[in-house]
Length: 149
Image (cartoon, rainbow, N blue to C red; front, side, top):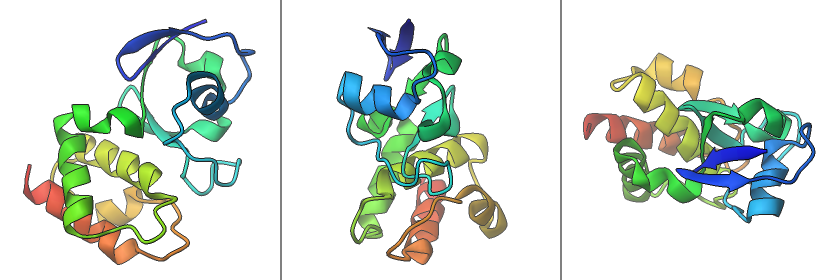
């Protein structure tokens, strides 16, 4: 199977129903994508599939064949992703940091779809869980990234 991941074409040897998360982490070595819950609830595994925030733990690898997959490792190659990361740093958003790669990917997808989101749109889009409770800092970082766009 052939996938486009972070702009590169990759040959994948995994079974078609293997979750994309495990292909990214175990077969390709992109460990910025995190395993959290395994049931698409927490969002630690969020990647962009054709620009859409996608929970990779429940996404069969065969379903992304022909699509463009972006992970946290390449987020700063995109201008919006670069702004999101800069805002995350400026706001000192992470505490433990475990969920933050998924948070950054979700924020990037939001700002690509809605460049100037209001607080309700931010709350609706940023559904990833953060055990440290940095939700206020996450929202502030999204607002900062939007203001710089």
